[in-house]
Structure formats: C-alpha cells, structure tokens
Image (tube, rainbow, N blue to C red; front, side):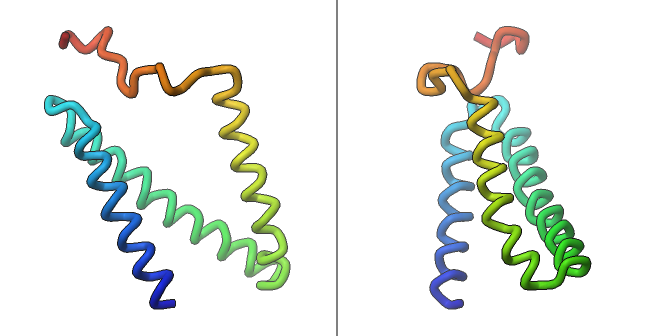
Length: 100
C-alpha cells in the first residue's frame, strides 16, 4: 500500500505539472479547472460505479468484471482515435478564440 500510495502521489503531481506547462498562459486556469473537475469527478464516478457493481454482484464478481471494463475503455479510446495522427494535431484549437 505504501508503494501504491507513493506512486499515486507522484502520478498526480506529475500530471498536474504537465497540465500547467502545456496549457497556454491565457487559458491555463480554465484548463486546470476542467482537468481537476474531470479527474476528480472520474474518481468519484468510478468509485460509485464499482460500489454499485460490488453491491449487486459481490466483491468477487466485481473483481472479475474489472479486466473486461478496462479492455472496453481501451477499445473506446481506440475507436475515437482510429486513423488520426495525434502527434501533429494541436492540443487546443485557437481558430475561434481570437488569439494568434
């Protein structure tokens, strides 16, 4: 648990620093607000979902369902990004923002 907790703290620190350095100056606060909302909201929604699953199918059933849900999440990301070269797409479109 100690190693997992330390890894979690390092991950959250690094991803927060990454978001701060990658976001343009003029929109940095909004990007961080949306990032934190989605990140923490996902944790809350995931906890509630797995609590519901565990309550209805038991802890063993929920543990057996988890690898399948991970594969579905990965497949969903693959479907949304299929055929796109994400290395050359801008992170933020500035076309309608009125900024150069």
